[in-house]
Amino acid sequence: MTRVLLGHERSSISTAASLIRANGTIIYPTDTVYGLGCNPFSETAVRRVFELKRREAKPMPVLCADIDQVSAVAYLTEDAMKLAALFWPGPLSIVLRKREGLPPLLTSHRDEVAVRIPANVVALELMRTSGSPIVGTSANISGEEAATKIDELPNELLMNVDLVVDGGPTLYKKSSTVVRMVGGEIVVLREGAVSVEQLISRIEEARLDLSVRRYG
Image (cartoon, rainbow, N blue to C red):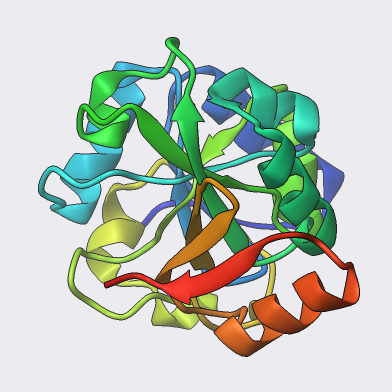
């Protein structure tokens, strides 16, 4: 079975960060669910994540430690910056136009990528220490439930990933909400830890000139 390290220990972060830099694959905690991660700029590592999840061609999100890392993977618009200021760090993923350095496989050859800054100390320290954003897809086999604690992780992943970092139960215990900016409108592609009502309420409180609607 793959090594399991405790996320609150500095040595665990250093070991996991070294694996990310070496294009390895790890399971790690976020504020939503456990993630299956790697260096998003490595096509080899990204392909391995697809294989581990038994995932068909479907875009995967990227988590970042700060706005500088977000800007390394995507183009932030003014409206996206305003929205990010309200919800990051936190469980809101924003779909943005991707930078050219990301491998096409990561986004299934689309020109956009979902990004966010998570509210989880272990995940943030991992990205800061490795100096890299990290793929943020859920640590499960495609089609199965996402894990919110270590003992919910599938054995298939535990046996084949390079390292597991245990950060305890996740905060929100559900996936992030995913939105896309279309002009001055926020389109909710997936409702998760941030409800549509919370989105509307926070935007109104901040007096932003942005509207919200569900996709479809």
